[in-house]
Length: 163
Image: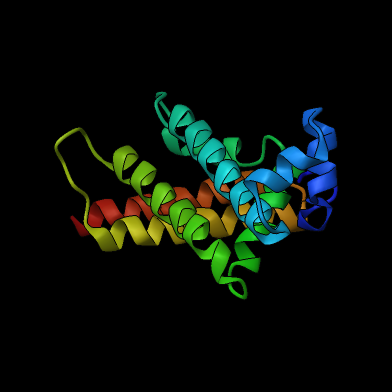
């Protein structure tokens, strides 16, 4: 999916990439839409696993900012399908899994075990962080990573003061 976007996901391309006969993909996926939805779900699961691992270190928010930019083609595929889910109900489950998973990861990074941050705080940080990821990915501006870190730091400071 990261080589040519979601339009490049076809039964033939997947079979070729997996070194399988074409019949193998059509046996498991009746349509291209099913194939794309499953590819999106797998992409989301993989990205969330990588983000969970990144968030376990001493600077979870800095690691999250960096981790989401590690593989630009894969990230473009993720966000392409995320936006496409707005028009394709078959992709909405994976899009929600992405947003919910990001929220869970951020909730864990916000407080110690046993402490549940306010849902609005988690939502605010999820929207901010995913918006920063998307902006960095699309615009590729110089110093955007540093600016993102400053904005995230300001948001975290505001949340601390609100407690």
